Length: 567
Image (cartoon, one colour):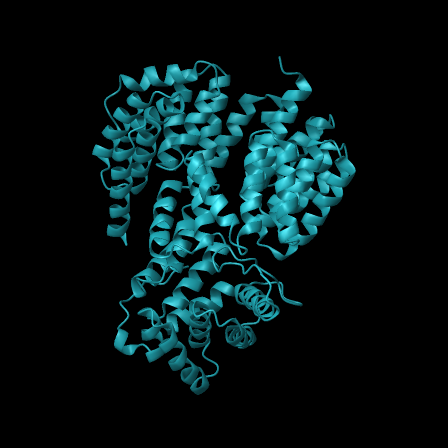
């Protein structure tokens, strides 16, 4: 029998592990005529980086204010590992676009690599995709997208400009735009692996099997790419292939450039296994390698809190929050939310409220922040008053999405499913981001109210809104409610085969370990939607769980073929 405090500790460990792991307007394309491109751009696209650098050196001298040429020159130099000359070119690029944070960060990391090379020491160089965003002095607005978009338009044949623009869109959270520009870069420079890595990152959370296939292809072409190997471990972890993830992390830990991040990943794994001391050891080792590694600092704060060392935990979490000010708003929000969790565990509700408020301002669409805010008021026995404030705000401004989001969590915490259902319906009707999420939650409330048939239909509607990447999450919601899985399965099994119902039945059966049944459902869905890349990846994962490795590899191979066809 696990005590109440023991269960709470296990829940905190799981939440902490999840948080550490989380720290991570296009123009119509016209075919670029290679004849119209500069000699340096053409050489770059064919993989002749030495020739590209030689030509681009002359071209930037002739056109010193051309940002597109200069960044292409800098990226060519980075491919040659000529960090000193690349840093000089990036310095000029920053002068041309001073508020483009992605260029500033790339300049800072390249300069650090130059100093480390001269000193004969190792230095981590942040990758372009997923790079840290560092605001410059007095700069409040990041113009990375605007500046790089203009450079990519002026040089439509430059793979380097297109890929950097993909990075800028990815950092701003616009993943569909990022994917479009990465694909253009891949088409322009087929042998260059960087855009494929960026494309893989856009799919890491929503379609990890597809991300894994892209990264596997990168490593076949570039086996020494430790950063790609690290992210491949993340993709494997998300698809349940833990043994392969472990192998990737261990291999990435052998490279000084990715050692700290690999140690953080291993620490996160130990957190998920409730091995707090082992996790803390990994986070400590990561900080020894890279004292500024933010996920390592966050991990240390969480392990200290779980050991009830609340004083040190709050200091560490506060330090992480300060360090995060150089990061993208979404990442900052996660770090502040972690600080709030640590402060709340210590009973420091004032600081917890401050951190939650900061996180909310940074990422107003992150519903987990509102959930923690409601939980904080519930812990202080002031939930009813907080709900009344939000109801008043919504009455004064009926379209206030923030008040609606807060009320959705407030009613959940209060167990008021009638009013929660009403507010979730309003969020759906208002077009608030994440329609599948509101439908999922309204299904949960309908189930709690005993309206089982209505709940089934709402779960199915959630599948429609989030197909095909959110169905597993919806199945988890169903499975967490007593008898819901069997009820939903029974209801939809007798219905004429449809894509969404079949995909939900697959996800429920898969979650419960009924793999043969899940495969039968999934194959029927694939027959209805044969060119869906995600479905084929799910088939490969399912066959792997069944021990049918050869068939799993065939499915993953077919998924790769579908990806190439789309490209």
